[in-house]
Length: 116
View 1 (cartoon, rainbow, N blue to C red):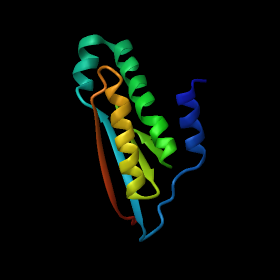
View 2: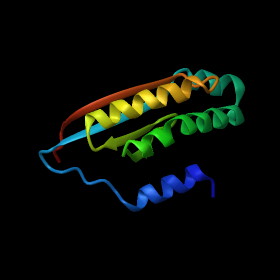
View 3: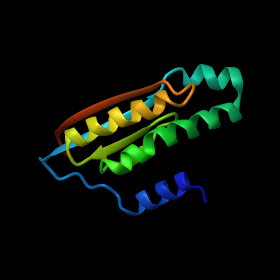
């Protein structure tokens, strides 16, 4: 099992339960131009790009206390303990992505009260 697959498997063992009425911070990542890249270069190239995304994103996610909630095609949705943790992770992810050719990483963060 690859390191990335192991991380996702372990993350799935501990599902996130949002504390009702308390702030929660969500992050979404996305690879800019992924659909065109995949359509032009094929499935293998698309998988290589997804792996480069994961190598840029997953270490920062773990280091800053993030937890993957779900995979979203060419990105993911994660939750963080505090907004500052998500922002610090996003900055680290952007720096790591800049060192990986073709990974135009887009990141969105939202923080607010959780409700059911």
